[in-house]
Length: 230
Image (cartoon, rainbow, N blue to C red; front, side):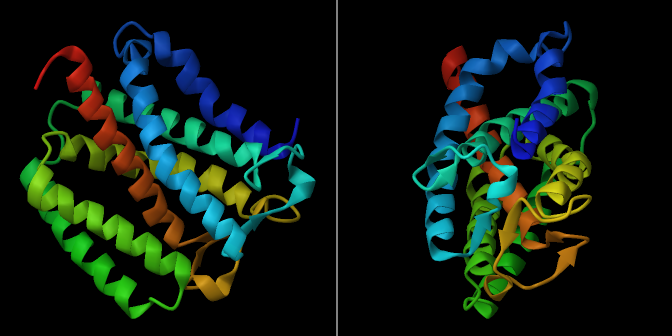
C-alpha cells in the first residue's frame, strides 16, 4: 500500500468506525453526505486536474500506487472522499455535543470580514495562481454565506473547522513533507505566497475552509431535501 493510501486509511478509519455510534448515528446521514461529496468533488477535482496540468502542484510518484485517472493519482481522487467524510463527521459531533456554539450573528460577521479580506488579497496577489483562485473562491463563498444564505449552522461549522485544523495539520504536514524525506504533494512556490506553517502552505488553510464549507452547504441542503423539509 502506498504511503498516500495509508494516510487515507488513517484519516477515515476512526470516523468510519464511529459512524454507527448510537448518539450521532452518522451512518443515517450517508445519503445526503454522498450527494454533498459528489457536488463538491465535481468542482475540486476539476480544479485539481487543471492545476496539476499547469504545474501549480504535483505528486511524488515514489509515494503513490501508480494508478492515474485524468492525470491525477487515484490517491488524490480519494482525498475528496476521505477528507470531507471525516471533517463532516467532526461537524456532526460538534452539532450534537455543543449546544451553545458561536452565535450565528457573530459567525456571519466573521464570514463577512474574512470574505472581504480574502478577495482583496486575491486581487493583490492575482499573479500567483493558487493564492488568487483559492482566496477568491473562499472569499466569495464566505460572502455568499454572510449576505444571502445566513445559515443557522454557521456557528457549529466554525467550531468544527477550528477543531478539524489539528488533524488537518498532521495529515497535510505529512503530505507536504513533514516527517518524511520528500513531500508527497509538492507546490510551485512561484504560484503561492511562499509562506509555510512548518511545511504546509498557508493557502491550504483557506483551501480546507473552502472545501469544508462548500461540502457542509451541500450536505445541509440535501439533508433538508431528503427529509422532506423546505
